[in-house]
Length: 110
Image 1: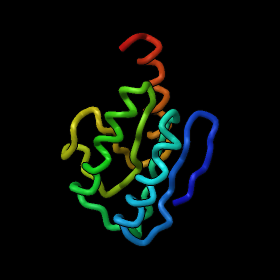
Image 2 (image 1 turned 90 degrees about the horizontal axis):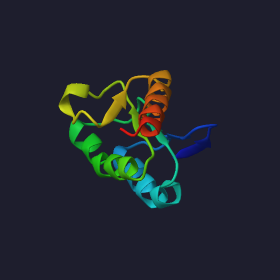
Image 3 (image 1 turned 120 degrees about the vertical axis):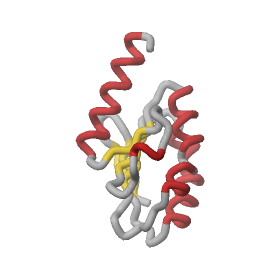
């Protein structure tokens, strides 16, 4: 797992060969990043199912409750398979847009 600090968020990129390895690494590091906006970027070499994505739902909910954002970048996920407040997008630009939009919503009190 590669962790890159950006201006407004932390970008976490998978360098593992399996989802279970990545999820284990993420779970171990997540507490250290709880006050940061997170973007997870999965490599195409990891095969991820909808069930796998749902393991991150609890983290997404915790992030929202703490006033931070959580976005997953993946071209393999079907957005319609997930709750509306669970952010899965196909590109980094869209993930950055979500973080910006959620920051505006928090400023406006939504």
